[in-house]
Length: 113
Image (cartoon, rainbow, N blue to C red):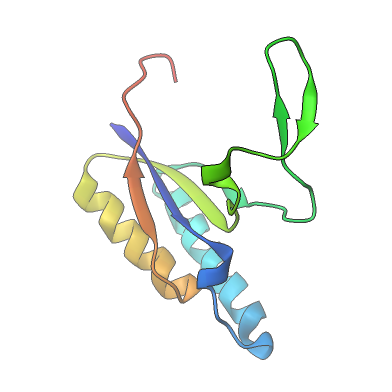
């Protein structure tokens, strides 16, 4: 089976403040459904209050990130699924719960992960 990344940028969520709790409950329900189905691997939202850091091979740490990932934020789920079509079905469930479109990407197969 293939692992799929289903994600969205934080700015894609345009939810009125009064409805945010309902969105969270709906998203957690989809996560629980994925867990119950045995598809859930990992997921969560990027904590935007913690700044990114770059770590070199020698352990040197500096603030910042790669230019192309400077806007990395939002929610991420990794599911292990039998097909791309199944990933699209799960993405639709997350899209409905989070009220925003979801991006689907497949991971390369890795026999030890």
